[in-house]
Length: 80
Image (spheres, rainbow, N blue to C red):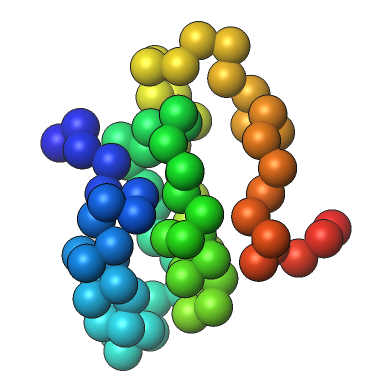
């Protein structure tokens, strides 16, 4: 699967699923097929509010010269 389901376009899916993750006691999820050129702030903030960590794939291969810290973190993230 190469679809990035963690954007605003798919909010109807992940907004439904996050409460189910909480009910199952999930505290971390592994994400694949994350497009570094798209905004994931809403999804990441929803996970943060639910107390769920995200482990994000770094080897997307679709973004040359992408750095982990090339963009500011969403405002919901703690300012460490």
